[in-house]
Length: 269
Image 1 (cartoon, rainbow, N blue to C red):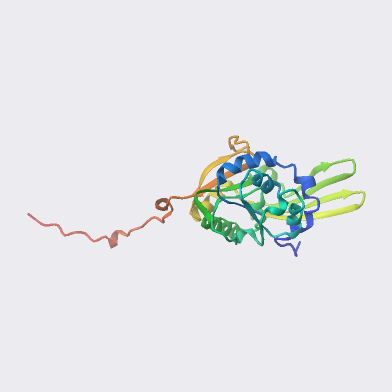
Image 2: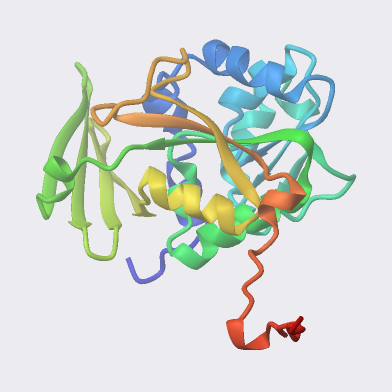
C-alpha cells in the first residue's frame, strides 16, 4: 500500500460504503445525541463522507457543514435528499480549514479520527478543533476502544457480511507497538473481486484525553454508545465529549525556583 494517502479509502470504497457500513449506528439515534450539543449554533463534521449523520442532523434544523478528502464520498452524499444543501470543504480534516467563524459542535464518527495515520496529525486535529469551538461548545469523538485480546493477534481474518450473491471479508495486520492497523476489505461477487484498503493509527481513550488537554480542552463525559450507556473496560466503542478548559485551568502551571525567591531580611529586636 505504498501509494495510500488521505483520499485512498474514500475514493475506493464510496460506491459500496453505505451498502456495507451504512447500518453501523442508527443515524437518527446519533443525531438525537448531537443536536442538543449544537443547539442553535453551527456544527462541523470531520470526515463527512456520504453524509449518513450530517443529513439526519440537518433535518433537525442544525446548520451542518463538513470536511472530507474524498470527492467520491461527497458525491454520494450529494445524491441523497438534503445532501446537496450541506456545504463541504475538500481537504485533510486534520487542518480544520473552514471559514465563517466558530462552531457550537464539532464531531467525528465511526473511527474516522484514526484515519489520521500518526500521532502528530491526530494532535494537530485536536488543536485546530479547540480553536474553532465556541464557548460552551463540544467536540465529540466516536471511536473503538482498543481490545488487546484482538490486537495482540498480529493477523486477523473476519467475515463481515455474507449474502446470497456476495461475501465481504476483512484481512488485517496489527502492530500494537506503533498502534497501527493495515487492512483490506475484500468483496467477492459474481462480477469479480474488489479490494478496499484502509490504514489506521488507533489511540486509547486516555491518550485522546491527553491530546485534548494539550489542546486546551478537557473530557466532559464519556459513554459506551450513542444511547448514553455507561462506558466500561468491556465497551467496544466510546463516545467522548470534550469541552474547552476554563482559562485558569488551561494555563500552564507556574514553577518558581527556590533560589529565585528573595528572602526578606529579618530584623533583630
